[in-house]
Amino acid sequence: MWFGIYVKKSYKQCRVFLVMDVSIVVPTYNEAGNISKLVRKIFFEFEENKIDGEVIVVDDNSPDKTWEIVEGLKKKFPKLDLIRRLGKLGLSSAVIEGWKISKGDVIGVMDADLSHPVDKIHELYNSIRRDNFDMAVGSRYVKGGKIEGWGFGRLFCSKGSTLLAKVFTKIKDPMSGYFMIRRDMVNIDDLDAKGFKILLEVAVKMKVKKIKEVPITFVNRAEGKSKASVKEIRFYLLNLWGYFKREYPGLYEFFKFGIVGLSGAVLNLMVFYLMTRFLGVHYMGSAVVAFVLAATSNYLLNKVWTFNEKIGHKIARKFVQFFVVSIVTLGINLGILFALVENVGIHYMLAQAIAILLSMIFNYVGNKIWTFRK
Image (cartoon, rainbow, N blue to C red; front, side):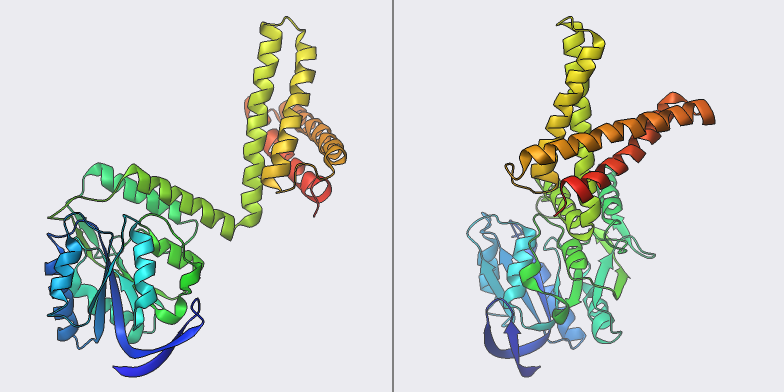
C-alpha cells in the first residue's frame, strides 16, 4: 500500500488517498443469502495471497436488506465499502458507480451469488500485475473452463450471445461477469452499458488488446433467484446495436439503407397488389404508382434516418436526384438479372437475389456521393 494522487477525469479534481492493489465491485440485489459468505471468502483470498484489496458492494436497495448485512460486515472488514442506491438501476451501472470510488491500481467485478470461484482472484490479479496483461477474464469457454448446473435453454442463450459478440471482440467468454482490468486502461466516462454485460462494453470501448482468459468453473447459484430476463436480452441487443454503430459506421449506414430498401419493397408489393386486385387498375399502372410511392418513402426515410438530414433541406432537388439513382438502379438490376439468367444459366430466383444485392450497393453509393453528399 502506498500514498498517491489519482485524478478522476470527470471530476476535474485531485483526491489524495491510499492506493490499493485491487478493487473488486460486487453488484447486489436480493443477495442476503450469499453476500456474507462471499465477502469473507474474498478477504481471506486477499490475506492468503498478500493482496492489498478492497471490496465495494453496490446494492440497489434490496428488499431483503442485503445492504444492511454489508453495513454489519464493515465493522470486521475495514476495506469493505457500500454504495446503497435507491432503486433497481442495473448491474452495469452499479459496476461503473463502484469503480468511480475505487482506489485500486487494478479494478474488477464479480457476481454476488457465489457462482464465480473466489480462489481465482489471485490468478486474475497476477495475470495483470505479474504477467503484464491489460485485462484478465474468468472464462467458462477456454480449455479447463466449464459450467455446472445450467439447463439447455440457458446454455443456448449464453452461446448465442457469445456468438453475436464475436463481431466486436476475440474474447472467448465476452459474457463473463468476472474480470479485472488495469485502472489506467479505463475511461469511466465513456461507459454507459445497460443490463448485465459490462465486460463487452469495456473490451469494445477501451480497445483492450492484451487479454488473458483464466479458466473457471461457473456454478449455478445456491441461494436466491437468477436476474436473467427478457429485459436483459433486450438491453444486450441494444448494446450490440450501439457497438455496431460505433465500430463500423459505414457498414451501419449501409445496413440502415438496406432496412429502408426492404420497407420500400414491402410497400411496393402492397400497393401493387391492392391497386390491381381491389381497384381494378391495370397491373402496369399499378406497378408505376407502387414504384413512385415506394421511392418517395425510401427517400424520406433515408434522408431523415439513414443520412441524418433535416427533412426540409433541399427536399425537392434531392428527391429528383434520389429518383434518378433509383431509376438507374432499376436498370442495373434488370440488366444483371437478364445476364445471369440468359447468359450464365442461373435460376431466376438466385439471379434476382444477386442482382438486388449488387444494385443495392450501387444505389447506396450513388446516393451517398451524390444525393446525400455532406
